[in-house]
Length: 401
Image (tube, rainbow, N blue to C red; front, side, top):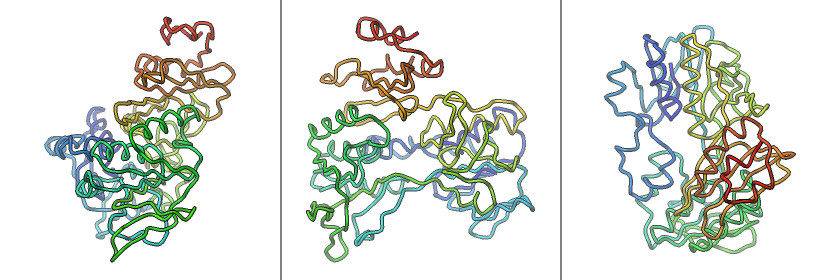
């Protein structure tokens, strides 16, 4: 039984069959769609460059051929650990031997006047993206509430379509929770150069409306930013209520071990909703990334099929904005030095994060040659050779001991 229908759930279906699982597989998904890719929702799909059919992780024929039962437009509301049953919102009961919770995360809400106005939206699902795409034109006035990855990606897409864009960020810099001030400045300059009006240290206190339709966003300083569309992107929270109600430990996600098992060894959690140990980084993490979802799905399938495959990966992520591809690896929290390498003016450089001389993370802008070896260097706790690092003729991979 797989609860959820995102990247993690789709990969779990694939990997279970690949690992030799011959038993019944039931997938329960809240949306009316088979599992699909989420990253394009704020980029190519939103811009209309990618059609709906190319969004799906696997075609419908895959699930039919692999005898995977897909119950869509359904929602699991209870896991009965004693009876080994999952109940859905329609009252259906499914018996289980194993349950994989892959419920992902949901956008955080803001509760301010006008939140229900026509034109105020969020971006998490295909339906969200389709509705936003239908509204978005060159004449749109778009206000982005929250300048994280999703907000900045939507800003880039809206500008590419010719819309006027204002980004509102409560912190003193964009991407403040995930990167360094140096990298924040680069992205601020990039978006401002593209015509985005970025307002830092401000919050939206109300959505101004006329006859229920959005007309503007009132800011904490009293100003009103004109708006026909407002996209709220202030982060997500893991969907953990099923686990909580079932009495499973939850701490910023559903607590699992390196094999994705919860405290109930017949119940697993993977993807954005899980909090897992990482031996390479010596900490616990809850990650919101496609690579994490895919790799944890491979681990849970191996575990269920009786094979030891502990999940132990260096986290990595990417973001596409305009002509810039950002690739990150590791976790930059706790760094004491950041080294820049490359040409910021040419938008081809990297930022390496060190802790006492040891590489712990990298942000690479249009620099795959730096990014690709960095994951192994981080895992190996490689130390930088500053003399070599300063010589741009020396490949990145050869600048560490």
